[in-house]
Image 1 (cartoon, one colour):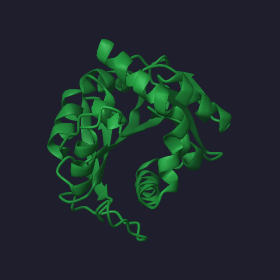
Image 2 (spheres, rainbow, N blue to C red):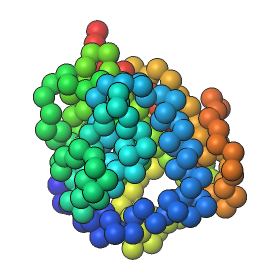
Image 3 (cartoon, rainbow, N blue to C red):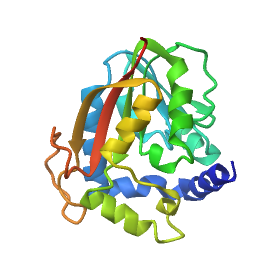
Image 4 (cartoon, helix red, strand yellow):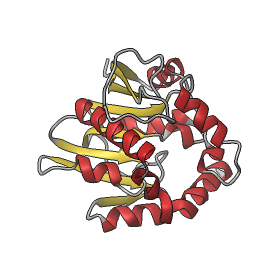
Length: 223
């Protein structure tokens, strides 16, 4: 529990400047790439949950009249910014989602598994609130990529948010999902250009070996 509190405090401190990174060339490239990946995997309608929504930047761009997205985050400073964007918000941890069972058509999380003390606790918490045919999309940094190396280097700085992170491989995240009762449906990669040379071209690839970010779509195993 103390580890989780430390992580939340780190995000509380960074909330005021969190979105600044998305205005830099590398941040623009990363955001557009991840947003493109999410749009390709999420349903076009229904009620969904952005888990670890932060300031709500992804939910703001993914929300439509048909696709309603609720933002959930444990940082009051972060979720306040999401509320200021006009989004529906919940102040709560991913380990204890305060929603009734079977209410969601989909859920997604962007670089969340990297910042939670126990990924299984989070995945187990998400499972009950999804409908039987609902999907979960996890977007995570590929530890075995150039982007993974960048963030691993940043983790050495105690002032960086990434000091509290742990990066994973595709095989590890697949194992987490299987153990929590999910079936893998689709895997795609993006951020194929290295972070020191961000590209104007936004692409998705089935070859995830060098992709900086991997998007994994899974469904509840109802067997």
